[in-house]
Amino acid sequence: MPNIFIRDHDWMQSKQRQIDDETLIDLLRICEYQARRFTLLDDVGIQDNGDPTEALYIYVLDALGVPPSGTKKMLTGEVDRFTRECSFDREWFDELFYSKYLLENDEYGYDYPDLLRVIREEVQNHADRHYK
Image (cartoon, rainbow, N blue to C red; front, side):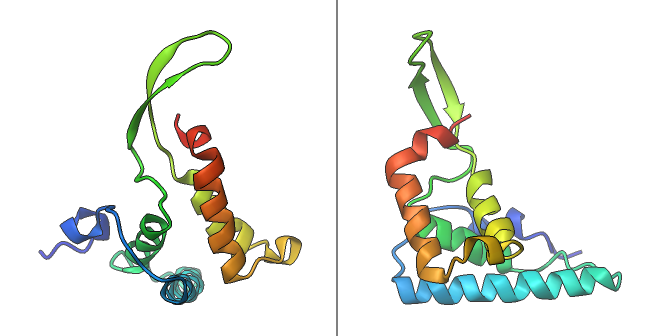
């Protein structure tokens, strides 16, 4: 049987990418379209395990400099002065796009350039808080 699970393919793995903002916005629009399509299919009982949207979304995060999930880093605690190896978690970024933007955007009022700006600022200024 062919492999229909997208995360199992080599080309799906995170890597450094250079993509201009207009293309990143188009990729996010495709992700939004597919997420809404996926929800409608799911509502009528159809499951799509081969949807490539997740790959596009990971491409966007890679191009914005978000470390891949599981990236290891040694962090030292400010209070207890401990040092431990932590792994990067992309959950905050998933929450930003899939929940705050797609589901709750009436409250936040984000557009695509806003999303790119917020993600870039988070990576530049607060990346360490996403290591767990």
